[in-house]
Length: 343
Image (tube, rainbow, N blue to C red; front, side, top):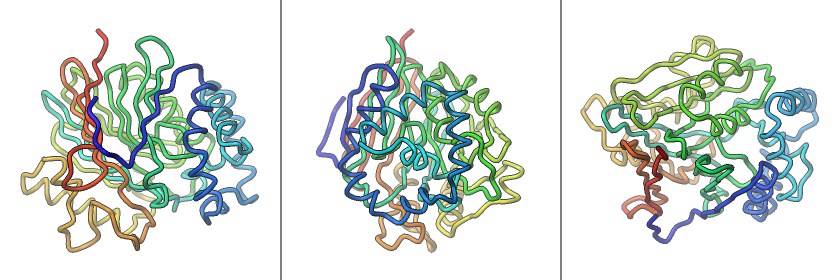
C-alpha cells in the first residue's frame, strides 16, 4: 500500500466482534465527544420520541444479527457512551429521512469492472474519519471507510472475499423500521460473495432506504440494488451508470421518497456526463461544472449539510481489487493499493 499525506486515518483491527467494536470506538471517541455529541442531529436522533422504534430494532438485531450487536456493544464501550445512544445513532437513517448521508456512485461494468464513489457526510468529521482494515478470520475481512461512532458497511468497502460495496442513502418516507439498514450493511461485509449479499437484502429490508453497488472479481456485471421500506429491487448493470442518493427503480421508493435538490442535480449531471461519453471516475465524481449543485461537494453552505470526505476508485481485476482513495482534488491518491483475492 502506498500512502501520501492524508486527512484520513488508517486502523488495523483484528479479533472477535466485540474487540472490533472496541477498537472502532476508541478510534472515533475524541471526534464523537468533540463534534457529534454537541450537535443538533445527535440530539434529534436520541429524542425519546424514537424510543419504541429503537427498542424494536435493538431486539431484532440481537436476535438475527448477534455478531453485529456484539460489535455495537464494543463500539459503545470504546466510545465510553451508553449502548442505547450509540445504537440509536446507528439507526439514524431508519429514524429520519433527512439523516446527513449523501453520496454518489459510478459503476462501469466490463471485463475489469469499476465502482467509484464519493462519500458525502457531516463536514465536522473531515480529518477524523478513517479506513478500518478488519480481519475477523484467516482469509476473511474487509477494508471500509468509517465515520467516528458508526459501524462499517454503510459507506464503501473492499473485501478479502473478492467483492466491493458502495452505499448511497435513499430518503424513503413512511418507514416502520424493524432492523437498522446499517446493521444490514455491516452483516453484508461478512458474506462470501455478491449473491449472498443480495439474498440477505431480499430477506431483510424492513428498514430505512439504501442503495448498494456491488461488484465481484471475475464477474463483468455490477449489481445495483435498492432496498428498504419492506422491499428490495435489483438490476444487473451492463452499461456505465451513476446513482445519487434517491431511488431510481424501487417501486415504493420511487412512489414515496424525498429527493433533495443536491441529489437531483448530481443525478442529472452524472447522467449527462455519461451521455457525453465520459466514464473516467474522477472526471465525473470531482465534477463541479454543473449549472445546479455540484457532484463534488465542498461548500460550507451545502443545503443538505454534507461534504465529500473521500473519493474511492475500486477496480476488480482477475486476482483482486486495485483501489485508490482521494481526499482532495488535483492531488495523488491519499492511499492506493491492491487487495489480492485468495484463491
